[in-house]
Each structure stands twice: as structure tokens, then as C-alpha cells.
Length: 361
Length: 135
Image (tube, rainbow over all chains, first blue to last red; front, top):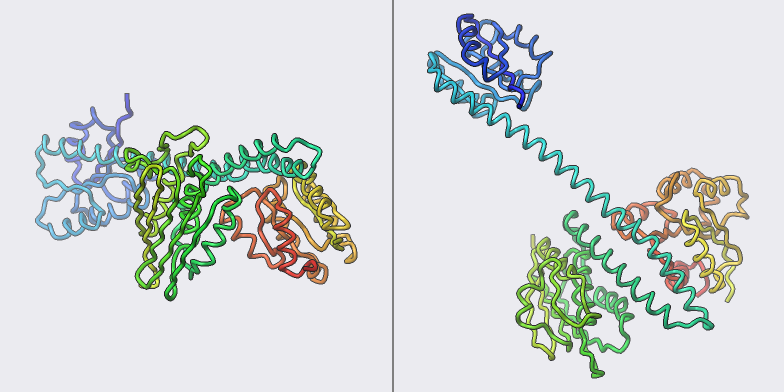
């Protein structure tokens, strides 16, 4: 059984204290005090959950007393009992959050009982909320640590393997085919780890704005990605009118994901695979189009491609991790951008992205 | 091309130390390569070494037990400025967190942040760009 809630009742009229205790002692653990001073003595030793006081007392008023208890037990529920018509000060105290409930004298026992139950509920939900908050903080903290170790502890041995493979590839006397296979698998696993970290960094950090040069940014990304497949033809068309202020980290994540998909989902036939990137940056916003001549996306998959862990069923070796486009969407949401996609199976896919220029406050 | 570089490698991971030394040797990037598994020992070495024995380049890992890369940089900053002036530090870590990257670039001795595995072509290009080796 749950422990009874601890209730303190402060009133200079002793009769009230006695009757209150008699009525409520079965449901609550009752403490009483004849004045504020005696009450503070009690509060020092006992953690009270519900504090009730009469408004009209010598030394200090009930409201003044309740106000001083906030620092001691911020979670306690405070109830004021008034016999007089000084409603203005009571309303003021309730509005300022110093008093949660008030009861008029003389009280009706049943009504008072209901109010007490109400106070108990308030107290219990406050405690529960606090508990949930602590749990949430803990989960968040664990997630932080997981991401940190994913970034380091998972990547570190993987990068050692990659280093050994690259070293072995420099030795012509060894059969290179095996090392290519190992290298590809390691790079695939590393990409997945990088994706997880990108997602985390996107969800955590605020926008960091800087002046962007789309031509530079795009060619830097293409230079990096063209190593995936040297037979691909890249066509770029960048028109930048004036300055563009945006988040370079997120823009990079978005472009890398979309362009590497455009590279990856090529047709198995030997026909020339082309990836076209058109960027038009203007004062209001930038429009980015990534067009590929690849396998296309089946119309039934289109509505789902931005969902987490959604994978369109394609041939096995083209299977994605299901997180890339989700990160793209999340990143765009953070910077106020939009994305749309049109695709025809066996012809190709076009992604169109619009991101507002933050030069306009 | 043989470069007259002396390179110090600091990394708790022995495999990476071995690999990075191999890469440097294969590209004849340095005529002297010293390896330290323990960043504290590396610091002790620098502390007692004469200016002539200081490396031109230090490749420094971030995540290490006992003393991590950030702590090493703090201690390093207490060494004589005339020795530090001729030495450049490049961070080499498997961390790809932006926060780690931003944190180390605040140190004046650190000229770059590279992620593992060491891409030797990238390193050579970087050293050329910074005028540390001849183009």
C-alpha cells in the first residue's frame, strides 16, 4: 500500500485543528501547528506534501506563510482557508502561483474532502512528472553517450581495418579482389555510422548560418562522391545571384545524401549514367534540382521514401539503410526547406529542394 | 622526392600507429618517424628534447586513455614557444563529430583535423598547401 500523504494544517484556532485531524487522519498523515513559527519548525524535519493554512493569523498572514514554504518544498500543494471577504489578496495569490486551492470558512466536510483529494492528485502528478523528467534526462544522456561511442568506439576499429586494406592494396603481389570486397563492406558500414551521427547532430544543434558559395560547395561534394563510380557523367549548372546565407552543414548532408542516391541507383545496363545538378540561388530562396537517369522509383514507394527505415524493395546489392532520405527530410525541416520528388521507373528520378535565403531576416 | 620531415605519431591504438608509420614510409614523407602509444610519454619526450630533436609534425589522436588529445594540447601549450613555433599539429581521429573538430581548431598549433583512416594523399596535399613541404 502506498504511504499516506503528509498534510500540515496551520490555524490559530485550536478547535479547527482538532476537528480537521479527527476527520482526515484515516486518509492522511496529519500534522498541525498553531502558528507560522511552530509550522516552520515542523517543516524543517518533515517533508510535507500538502500545506493548509488559515489566512487570518497573528505574526504573518496565511499567504505570506505559504509564500515562504515554496523554497522549502516547491512540489507541495498549497491550500488557503479564509473566513473573511479579503478575496482580492486571495485571487492575487492564486494567480501568482503561491496558492493552489482555497476554501471558505466555515467549510463543508464533504466539499473539503473533495478538495483534499484534488490536492493529492495534484501532488502525485507533480511527483510523477518530476520522475518522468529525470528518466527522460537519463535516456537523453544515454543517447548522447551512445552517439559519442558510435562516433568513436565503433568507427575506430573499422578505420583500422580500412587502413590495413588500403595498405594491402599497395602491395601488387596480393590478390586485389578480396581487398576490394572488404573495403566496400567497410565503407558501407562506415556510411551507416556516419548517417546515425548526422541524424543526431541535426536533431541536437541549431542552425549555424554562413555565407554560401554553391559552386564551390557542389564541386567539393561531387569530387568526394565521384570516387564511388568513375563512369558517371556529372552535369552541373549553378546560377547564384548575390549572397546566400544558409546552414552549410545541413546543406552538405542533404546534397551528399541525395547525390549519392542518384549515383547508386543507376540502371544495371552499360548505358551512360548521368547525374545533373541545377542550382538557382536568388534573394528569396535557392532551388536545387538533382536529376538522374537511373532506375527510378516505383509510384507505390514514392509516398514513403522519406520515412525512417523505409526501404524500397530493389535488387539486393542496392539495398539502402533506410535512413538517408529521412535525415534529408529532418534537416530540411530544421532549416525551413521543402523537398519534392518525381520519378518514372526506368527513366530516372528528380528531387527538387527549396531552401529560404536567411539573408532576409 | 624525399622530405626532410620528422614526424611524431601519438595514438593509443597500436594498429593505427603501425599503419600510419607504414603509409608515411611508403610515401617517403619523413626521414624520421617516432611512435608514442602514451600521450604522456610523448609530452615527456618533448619536454626534455632539445629544439633540434623536436618533430616538424605531430599527428595526434583525440580519444586516448589517461591523457586525451585535448589535455595533451593544453600541456603542449606550456612548452617553450620557440620550440613550438617550428612544429605543426594535425589531429587524426575517428571522431566525425563537429564539436570535436571545432574544439581543436581553437588551438593555434593545430593546423588541420583529419579523420581516420589516414589518407596519405590528402596529408601530402595539405602539407604542400601549408608550405610545410615543397610543392
